[in-house]
Length: 222
Image (cartoon, rainbow, N blue to C red; front, side, top):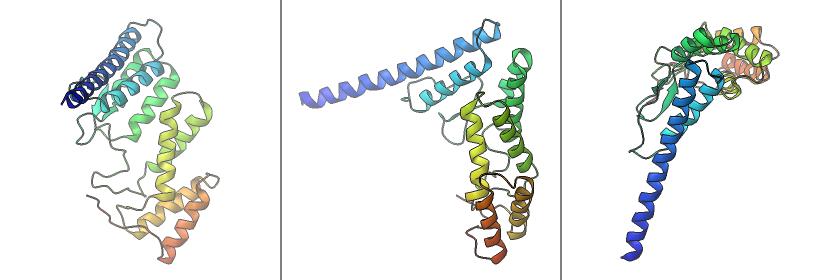
């Protein structure tokens, strides 16, 4: 019995520590945001990174931790899946940021739908539009940003480039039919023949043409 009570007490302590750590991360972010808006030294990238840290801490925190984060949107059905709101940070960038800040958050805003959570080319039903007209411009602009400012917003930039490359080289749930997927892959190869994923995309295109691909056309998940 004593051992059981000790285990319960330890669990409560750990829960309290988790909530406290999440609260501290949130306070650090809010403090950096306040100082940035006052023009007192923090870069917008520092503020953004601090917000990402707080979002991760809140996601993993116990139920009694704070459940809101300014500048972040709750994603999906998870009340603690906080995603950055590109419009919020773009407004900050326009008021106090650098050209790099404005370019980054403008590009982030173009990538995500109005909810700030779903990528523009990804349907709420779970499929991807391989022939979406913004796919090529997004890949071109993300890779260009990565090449010209390799030390800026590194984690997010790498994530978005990887998401686009994974879509073309590995994605299988297509919103459209075989012709639309073929058209999308052809445009990618024409625009980015030297992309590191071009060989894989070319092989997939050959499979689509031959009718042997692993694509699921007019796919809906969930």
